[in-house]
Length: 429
Ligand code: ATP
Ligand code: MG
Image 1 (cartoon, rainbow, N blue to C red):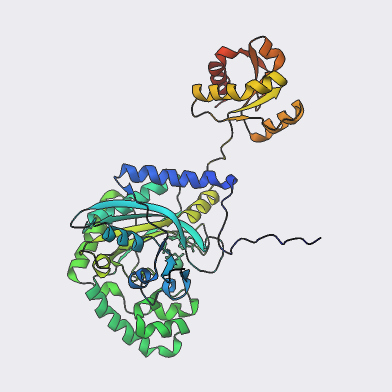
Image 2 (cartoon, rainbow, N blue to C red):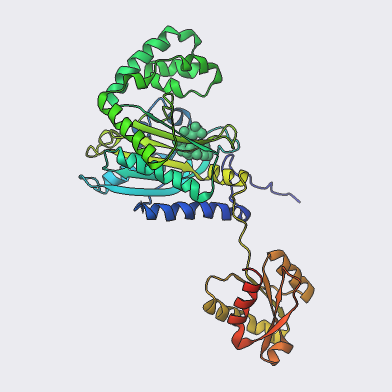
């Protein structure tokens, strides 16, 4: 007999198992609720776009475009890419749908992103983001609002041990001047550059600054600072952002080395990091991209956004002991006898009508009394409802708390919803 080897999952693309989903849903629901409270609307864009969109927005000399994209040619000959980030697709969608024209939008989206990176804890090839974008606001008021929103999200989730770093990258023009200075600096040290950096030298010297190679660290630390070459308007924008954050009571650190790994950023950039996740310490990052929309063929529109990684926030909640407990049933229905078997499902439906929101699991697939109680116990349910032929004949059913020593009681079938509520309250639920 030949056996087929089991199929493997794709490296870096993970299954989210039911035992973990509660934490994911907690993060997603908290974000969804908060975003609604700030007036942000959900937007759903495809996970596949033309490859050219990412080449033109993220930039040719970035890690993402150089080596991380999942790109393919489809049956019709189109060159497509699984989205490595959400902003470019969102901008494309706004242009396609004619939504700009001077309008303002506060939008967000969530879903999978794809990057062919080295697979390790906190760094995956399919990962998930909540991505928030504001279009048509020149800032810096909206910059501060977005940052305050992230700070509130950490508070709501009970996350401490996070730190906010901010910087200003200036305008495209001021950056061009800075790039020339950087180019001169790195050219003077060309012998110390690694292969990646040497390639980026002529292409985009700024990209050398986000090299993750530790051997490049000292050279990068000694490079000229962008903050010293900021244009007057960007400097004023940044100063107002800082005082607004002070007024809001959001602590931050100005990090003049923060450049971010995508080309489209202008002025404000920010990043939240934690010391509780090891090397994958960035949980949320974003910035302003005032030039991107025009660069992609839309009406010039200022914009700013950020994304946070759901996997990393989930990991962080677990590390900090702030992950919510798994959901358990409220009631497990144990069945004994032929009549009880017939009446169990209709009764459970009536209970679901009367007790919306209560989690009710019926023992299906049979099993003797002992086996059913074992399942009830393992389900984590607070309460068992015992439906037996003898009791049904008398118009009653039995209720038994499963997490306490208190004994079994009987309840008239007609009074079951109230009886269950009372028993659950007594059991602490
Ligand atoms: P890093 O510096 O860790 O590579 P990044 O700057 O590439 O992060 P962004 O493109 O800014 O990340 O994406 C925003 C957020 O998405 C990050 O702060 C992080 O939480 C998450 N993220 C990015 N890449 C991954 C990945 N490969 N796996 C899991 N989460 C990720
Ligand atoms: Mg990265």
